Every structure is written in structure tokens, then in C-alpha cells.
Length: 409
Image (cartoon, rainbow, N blue to C red):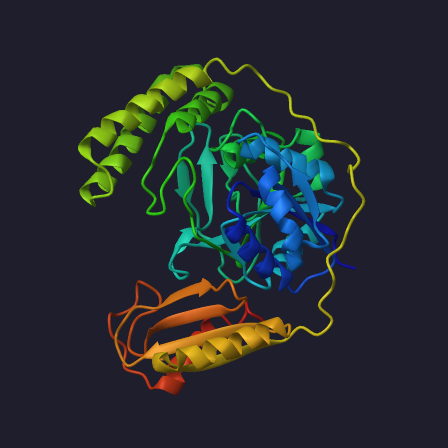
């Protein structure tokens, strides 16, 4: 029998993105799972009109603190495994099927999948480790298999907050997430605490999530930072907690250099003005000073769930289909895709033009996956700029590329 899973989604003032996320979750080819939504009170009220939230556990939560919100979600979770996804993300329909597989090994304490970025093609997150100074390093894993890794005291296995899972018993034993990390580094801190206990983490490339990296109070839609105060505060807590005292100062200097470089890169692209860079760096330093005053916090997770397991309705007849056509047929095809999605199918709609435009993928709010681009354009960004193929061949190649994660083959 499959493991019971609780999917925790933290959302704050982004009801449309949350609705889109819930539609994607409703198409998961896995059972049994429950949905736990932790959101601001206004969003919780609005969920009454969202069909996909009828069976969800809804937890009103006002503080602007993602770590504390995730802990509230864990408290209400009754699944053996707790999975986490952000409200601006959508999972592929096989997400849980792949992400849960490594937990059949008793030594697996946590797992993390891969994350695609805004264009639905490029990777935003793959396999990597992190050290006690907060430095990441990529690692190679088999892209088609889950790899269970043993951490070291120096390096932890990194998992992304929007695509990770852990045994509830492990989360309870470790006290969940540290609420001093209000918006940054909370999952990295958790990874290092797993490593300190020599607990294994699985990297699962086939467990895919698409992340929009949507705007919030800290960043704009284009990724440009708005305020780095909480980033600085999180680094102060992180370095004091994990970094050796003699390395704290050089590590903090490195962080400042990296943040300045990122801000300058946004400025070069025209997304920030020169004066913004100085303001952001000032806020980063102010936040670091404030973070140094945040005393030690001992997290607590209820040993027993505060609510019983509340499974989402199972999908008795999972069906995944492909619709395709030329871009000028888009209105008819999109209506057909919406109809099939409403009927319960997982729909991949491929719209092509006789051009060399690059391809993009996204999950439409009407409940289907939409792929657009030129017949001769590249999909993977490492491919040649132009590839000569027929329309039929291009549809076949694209269907085959996503076949395993969409259950098309």
C-alpha cells in the first residue's frame, strides 16, 4: 500500500496562483494524499469558492513567516510523509509517485525533486549540496533514477522548499523549520540539521515541479529584489547557527559581494537604478544586525496531528492525452483542452508555428499544460538554434520528452 502523504502549501495574498497550484495537485496520479493549506485569513475565506479546496485542511495564518507557516502545516498533517510545494508552483502529475518512491527504503528521511523555471524548460534547481557557510555545489546524479545520498558533517544534501518531502516523524524529532528564518534559508537550515543527524536524503530528478518565481514583498516579477532586510537577517541567524566563528566574518563578506553582484546585474538589465543598489545593500546590512539579536528558538511540532487524515478524492481512471495543432488554431484547441481537463484528463496541448521560436511550457489556469514554440525552434536551451523537422515529428519529440512525467508512456 502507498504511503499516506500530506501536501503542505503556504500561500500569502496570491489567491489566483494558489488556485492554479491546487488544480495541478488535483491531477496527481497518486493516492492517498491530503492537502493542507496555510494562508492569510482573506485567502482562506476565498477558498470556499474553489472546488479543489473542498476536501483540503485550511489553516488561517497571519504572520509573514514561511518557516512558522510550514510548521503550522506540519502540525495539521496526518500523513506518514509531509511534502512541500509553494503556491506559485505546479507539480507534474507524477510528482508524488516519483517523490515517494525512495521512502520505501527505511533509511530515507527526506527527498527533493528537480524544479523547472519560468519558461517551463530550463532548470531552476537540480542536485546540489550545501556547506555550513551556505555555499552550494552541484552534484551529478542519474536523471532517470532516485539517488539516496548519505550526507557528511561538512556538507548536506540540498532540497528546494517548493519540491521536498520528509517523514513526519523526522520533522517532529527535529522541531520542524526554524521560525527565525522568515523568508530565506529555512530549508537549507533543515538540510544541515538532517546532515548533523546523519540522516539520508534522496534526490529524485523525475519528481518535477514548475516554479513561476512570482513576485512578493521581497522581489518583483522580473526577479529584481525589493528589500534585502530579511535576507540579511536570515544570514545572520544561519552563520551564527552553522558556521564556525572564525569563518563567520569572511562568509558574511562573501554574501555581501554576491548580493551586490546580483543587484548590479539587475541594474545592467535596466531592472534597477544605481541608487537602488545602495539602498538594497544598506537594508541587507541592517537586516544582518537585526538578525544577530534573534535569540535561539526551539521549534516544536505536535507529536500527534491536530487533525485526522482527510484524503483528496482518488482519480479512478487516470487519462493523459496530447492535443496538437498550429498556433492559428489556438482558440479551438484551447477550448478542447479546457473541455478535456474539466472532464478529468491530464492534457498536454502543443501549439506550433512554422518558425524557429524557442519553446515554452506552462500550466494554464484552465487546467492543462500548454507547449508553444516553432517547429524548427529549440526546446532545451543547449540545443541548436534551428532543427529541421516536420510538424508531426516535432509533436512526437515533444510528447516523448515529457512522456514519463505526464504518464504518456
